[in-house]
Structures are given as structure tokens and as C-alpha cells.
Length: 119
Image (cartoon, rainbow, N blue to C red):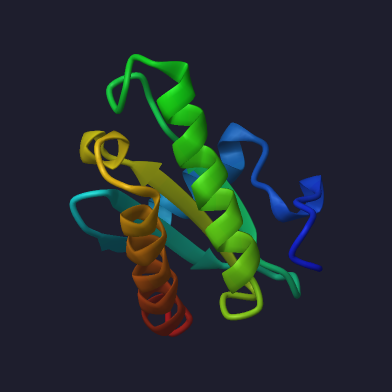
């Protein structure tokens, strides 16, 4: 991944793929996000994002969170290569700054890399 693109091969697109990751229960959580991960059989990291209306009724805020998750994932994809990851936003994520979101996600990427590679 070159840092500028986010092709469909790096995304979890189907509900079954989301369920497979959520079923493993290797997770990292804080007040902004819950991140689930599991190993995959590819040489790339794949991302699924869930930002519900419970997080914010405003689509603009939900889309901002999704953009920040994708951006953080692109920058950290080499670190978490070989993992399928699902990031689920919590309501507080719509109230904090971009910097807080990026910082939280970087901690999650580090945690799932160390915890979920073993399982």
C-alpha cells in the first residue's frame, strides 16, 4: 500500500468477513474505539469500519471518523500486515479532536499487532 490509496483488496466488504473477525474476539478497546482483529491468509492488512448513528446523528461527523480511521490504517498497514481488522467507533469519538482519534487508533494498531498475532 503506497499511503495514498485504499483499494478494495484492503477492505472487508462482506458481512461474513466482519462476522469472522468479530467472532475471534481478539480486541483492543478504549473510550473512542473498539478494535477487533484476526490473522488472515494474505500478505496484507484489511480494514472494516463501523460508525453507527448512535455515534452521531450527523453524517458529516460519522464520515470524518471514517476518514481518520482509513488514514491511520494506511499509515500503519505495514505494521499490521496479515491481519483483518474491524474498527467500531464509540459515541465519544464524535466529540474529540482529530489528533485524539489518530492517537487512540495508533495505540490500537500496536495492541492488536502484539495480541492478535499470537492467536
